[in-house]
Amino acid sequence: MDFTIELLILLFLVAVLAGWIDTIAGGGGMITIPIMLLVGMSPSVAIATNKLQGSSGTLMATVFFIKKKEINL
Image (cartoon, rainbow, N blue to C red):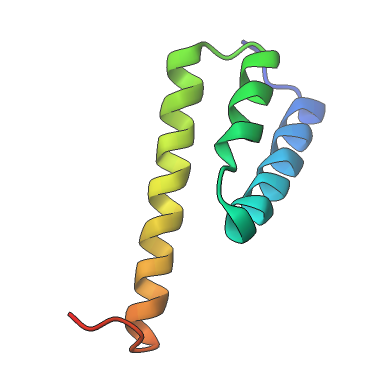
């Protein structure tokens, strides 16, 4: 699969939109996974990418809340 600059820009914009929706209501994967499949990614790569994206977001949110002392550990 060749990643052209146009495709990378499209994927970036979709990821930003999905991240915004995921922050507000959850379910950003419902946007990103179909787009990744439409551009030719295999289902296993699309789902793995979505899991990595979700795990990264959760890790960053956890670090943010720990720094703000919003979590009691």
